[in-house]
Amino acid sequence: MPRRPGLGHNGLALSADERLHVRVNSNLITLRSILDLDIARRFEWDAALVVELSGVDRPGDLSPRVAEDPGVLYDIASQGITPGSAIERALSHELHDAIQRRCRLWMAGIPTGHLDRLRSELGEGIVHVAGAPDEGLTPVALAPLELLKAWSQGSDRQRAFVRKSMAGLDTLTTSSTATWAARQVGAPIIERSVFLRLCRNPKFIAYVVVFAYSLIRAVPVMYVPHFKGNWRVLWAIDIITAIPYTWGIIEMVAGQKLWHRVIGAITTAVTFFAPYVYFLMYGRHAPLSVWLVVAAIFFSAIFLEVYRAMRDSAVRRGLARRCLEPDDELAPTGP
Image (cartoon, rainbow, N blue to C red; front, side):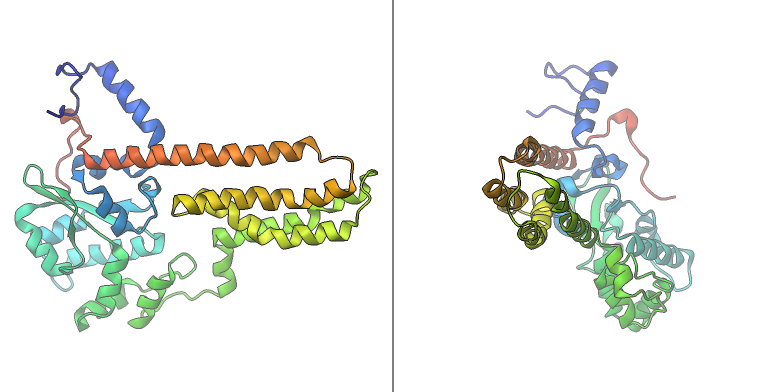
């Protein structure tokens, strides 16, 4: 029989020190994860569905930045949405804020008897039961972006709501899908140039930085007395391998599948070492630092994969069980 949270192996309640020790060990691996949110610890969630709705690659990528518990969902379930009401204005504000910040997931505990009203107001395919009901509340989850997309192509009232709520949306930080939906309804958004949006893209910045590094990495070789090769060839190798090298780093760190991350790590090591193969052909020996970096890439990839697997497992377990202790219980969200 599974133990209740807060009980030791002998079935007795854990002491305050023991509970603190368990929480500290758990928090180290799940630091800055979705489990920092009270709502994530309040229910037993369907971790697979939560990951699917959020659109992240893996459970460990669920962070407090991509999920939140907007109180307006409780209000909608309890009272519905009336045109011009405070609840409609609150939903407009919450949706605009979520889309602007790229919040991927809304989570809430809704009175089970009011669940049909929430679905009726927001859409049957938008609101998902995402866990086991508890004490009269049902955990639900939905993606704000899916709500925006559905309403931007919905009834005249829904389209008017999106047009008003998305007014002033800054396309510098929003997704292309959100920008498209806002344009569909004619919302007055703040348009930004492609160049400015690229400057906010982490992958683009990574490629620029590594390419710049590759442009200058071969320069010191010109002054190495034992190097007899052509520095221009070495420089060309640097430039050619810059893009696959950057791709390898990104895949090694953020690849969606294990084999993507393995290939990324191998690509990173090979493309980093490639210029030094030419150096070895026309010089005495490769610097010790080169071998140290290759070894660091190899062991870092292993460490990163083990850490992320442990984090995924810890977050998945944390979502699948109710983590709040009785003395930590929260009152239901809402008035």
